[in-house]
Image 1 (tube, helix red, strand yellow):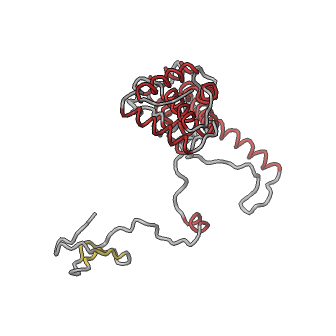
Image 2 (cartoon, helix red, strand yellow):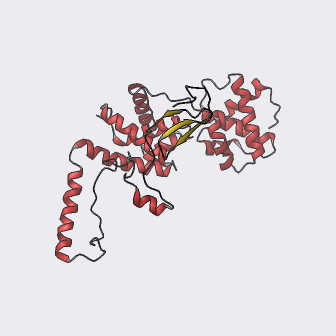
Image 3 (cartoon, helix red, strand yellow):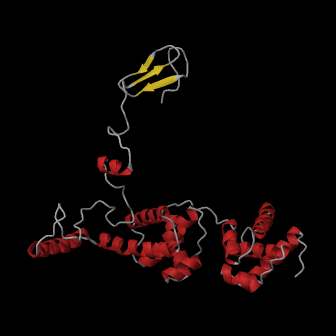
Length: 301
């Protein structure tokens, strides 16, 4: 990209799209001519015109087994003018649809993708994950297939591990317990597959920050914004002193929310917090004692 005029050194440049030139407005020197127009050659004034004049198709979708690159025979049984097709042609179209569907899944990999992506969509929908996370999960699963990491493993366990890895990458607070419950796969199995995927594909997965869970716990316990701010403040102090190293993020987040609720007079019991966080009361008690002693918190329970 040209940033200044080679003749006078000025930076006051103008691009003339009609002539395909880049001109210096200070000295009039034509810096470049016959430039390529990268935009469309047509104009559109609304979304309907834009859709009708576009020459490209829909983007690739990794959530679709064929990535969206397929011709489909619709179910409406009508011709190009909207008229109903007669019964003899309807029977022919039915056979065409059936064989087209069979031909689209011709080998074991395509069958595997068809099953896996359906399961991925189900789990991701139950976890309320956005579309970009679903697409990233589908792309990561395809990489696992290419590297042969699915051999001898349950499709559901690989799908669950992939979703957990992508959630970690996008800093979305979803735990192994949540994914295990929805996918109906043991947590240990998902964890084992997750470690294999991260090692084989050399994924750079950031450490889980307890801060991601605080807002969830505060909302579930119906606590105020002051309590959430207090919990974040306690967590900041703990992070500065390195108190959470080697501690589970869920337990630390639960303990900070519990302490904050007591300090803001919105007291919740350890059992209530433990049930929401999916940890034991013993874990909260241990983290609470550590934080209270190390940070010098004055709390009366």
